[in-house]
Image 1 (cartoon, rainbow, N blue to C red):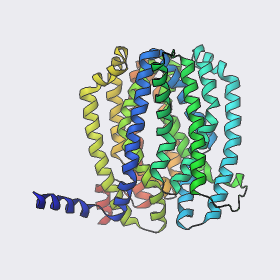
Image 2: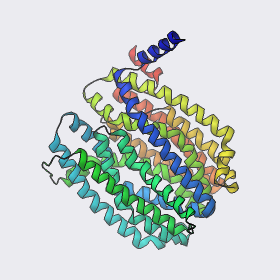
Image 3: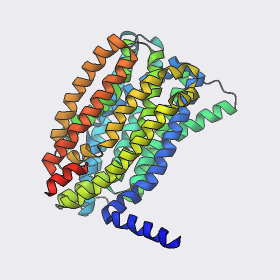
Length: 448
């Protein structure tokens, strides 16, 4: 028995090269944190679904989606640029470059996020009434907008930290910690018999963003104490970040288009149902997000050093593992989807067809691996941006046409089609531009 165990261990060890081991090591803790983060998000969503109902949960999620789009605009694509530039600067021990980038990005972000937040706060009532036909959306949206500034700083700092290969720390600050704090506040409110209302919940979200932002800043100062040339090259930073803004922006818009359009073209009740189905389906892809976080700085440094063959082996093995995970989750949702949805309450069970359709799209997303990140981290962010922008328009058109004709199931079909098609094209483009393929069959062709 011991010999068999040793044989299996040696076989696995031989399959994993040094780069893959490093990614798995960094992904391990991140994966655990991500699991906890998803658990907290699910708890919060199910808790609010039961206490606020589909309509209340729909208003919360519409607010969060609006903030996600505005955050993308205020950040100007800088986080992805920082991951790439900081990882290279850290590898070369160029501390002045890191100091300059961090200071300039903080300054630019403060200006952009403050201006955007103030403008939308002023027009929040009109947006709620005219666009979403939901007057109750106005106050929660305004409260969330106040919390947008600390959120944007946390996103920047988590990117800086990720550039230092602090993968799990970045994931903790960027996602898990705020979800945990909201869960904690909801539990305390329930135990202390405090009435849980829509407005109180939005204050919980905003408060958690401020707390996490402070924690992020303290941690960043603890790992980077160098005081060099701060610089003030805002225009240069904007120009460099524009391709990343198009890439990240198109991705954020694509991820939020369906729910926002459901809220616009139907009502907050339907948006509540749809948001739960989306949240569950996206569980499949969090494994991809974790590996992308660990891979992104490594892809940039390895490509810069011409390690193409090593990169191919690494990403193909990771993609194979992700494909297996995607298959398991898809089957799990098909078989147990209704039972899972009932956790939110009986009204949410009718979202089962949405869950199945959205899961198909996420299967293609995880099954194609980190093709998009290969393009971004290897200097082809402009190609990625053009592709993503094209699919944003396709996604919006498909969602509008299908929602008008088929309701929320139309939104699910439109999203699954665009997610699947875009990711397949990314694989082909990554292979043609860099020679790196996430799918082994293309890699074999290249070896020949």
